Image 1 (cartoon, helix red, strand yellow):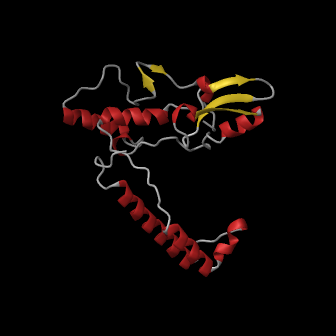
Image 2 (tube, helix red, strand yellow):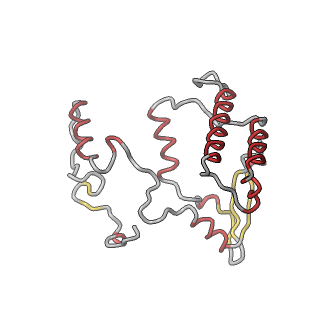
Image 3 (cartoon, rainbow, N blue to C red):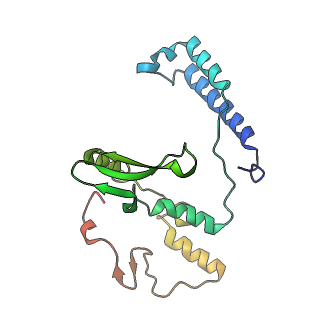
Length: 196
């Protein structure tokens, strides 16, 4: 990847991130905020922890960095992949029966045509993995901030339109997004459902 499009070269970012990350770990350890358990319990010893940090300083770290978005179209394309996507698309499921579910997945450690793999697992394990992607009640996949925040979205959008000299779209209701043209698009099964 070309680093000329970035503010700082990737290697500089990697070393800066490594230094700041390891310094924060050392500080947390010194203040007693960092504890280790099970297989890592030996790192509770200060000398061993210091030696472990020294080893981590000698390794080249990789920071994933890419050029900034080129404009609003790229931002919307990026966000769109996350706002309307489920854990796995139906098109990735290759085969299923009572004993297994086979689906395609990408191994990003590989390059070329063998990056896409097929995994076959028991249906119970497939459902368990799928449910890991569901958020608990009260959580949202994406929150809107600024003028799109729910608490004042309607007033702020109206202000933006006024400042831009734009009129409101015809048929827009007082509560944007809940009704449109007098029709409610809320799922009837969700009404009164405390989970949704």
